[in-house]
Image (cartoon, rainbow, N blue to C red; front, side, top):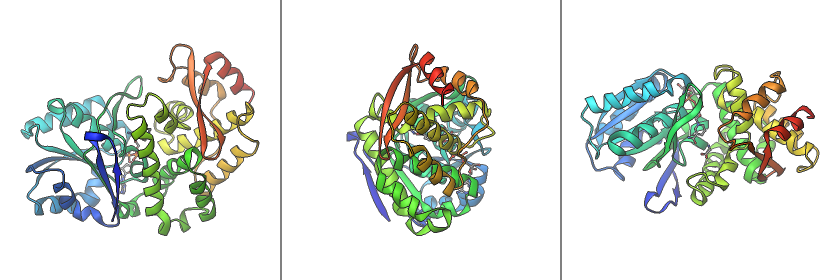
Length: 355
Ligand code: NAD
Ligand code: GLY
């Protein structure tokens, strides 16, 4: 088992990464929790596969878990489900010194973290991410949220977990499409900050060859994310770079009404737009977009969309990252070197039509 520390002063925590460590979760949780009761939030799919393993492990350590289950999928990341989770925690008479454990993908992690941040003005929680996307991204860094009718992640809080337990064996049961979605975030880290990782992925050349290297790759992604979070926990500057591909991606997700594209697929398409835009403006050398597209294709991700440019422009102009007329895009200089670019909605639209 590997250990990675997130250095955030009195909110510092560890990420444990290993194969089969779900069955040791009770043991690991005991390091940060001396109480007896925990809400165990999961979705029905994940619960059916891993619920008993974790329940047994918690029981061995004298922790009684109260399971709270939601249907799988993005639609569950709602304010009404947040309310229902909080009510179930209150009905179970959980107190401020009890714990919430979020077992599942980013939907469960985001909603669970938000529930922990507001329940009795904030209780401790542990992330046990079970998708590739949540293992390399959403479980680390303390961004929690639910979606509103007006858009994704519009209500939330920064609330760091006390511990992240990352069992790479859980990825075995993930569908190929969900695995590919997670690979979009892995590739994002390469484009953003790590040309060696990008080259390693290009050499591996696709899912079939990745298994032996996967724990190391996941650890590297968490380390990159940790470094950004440590330098800018509240997302006021440098952390925004982690949103490479996301401004375009959110527009694509919204256009697909959050059902057509997985988050990772939208991020993949978003990275291609960011790369093309960077090339067109002369920030990136010609050919970068093609290299990124090739790597995405290797890992079974979409690289092209038939969504009209007008739709993307209109969704992005409404993007929550827009401040007044200013849009912040994450653009690419070189593999491993990205930057924040500010532009106006009008200039952005003009450039997009010229792509
Ligand atoms: P998800 O939680 O919906 O999981 C995807 C699907 O996989 C679900 O149907 C789930 O039941 C299933 N699943 C999960 N683990 C499984 C396993 N081991 N075996 C079989 N099936 C499994 O989605 P996700 O892709 O993990 O996360 C997407 C969410 O994460 C989005 O809401 C996004 O906004 C959020 N996100 C948050 C951050 C952050 O920093 N907080 C970062 C990136 C994404
Ligand atoms: N997923 C982007 C962030 O955590 O900042």
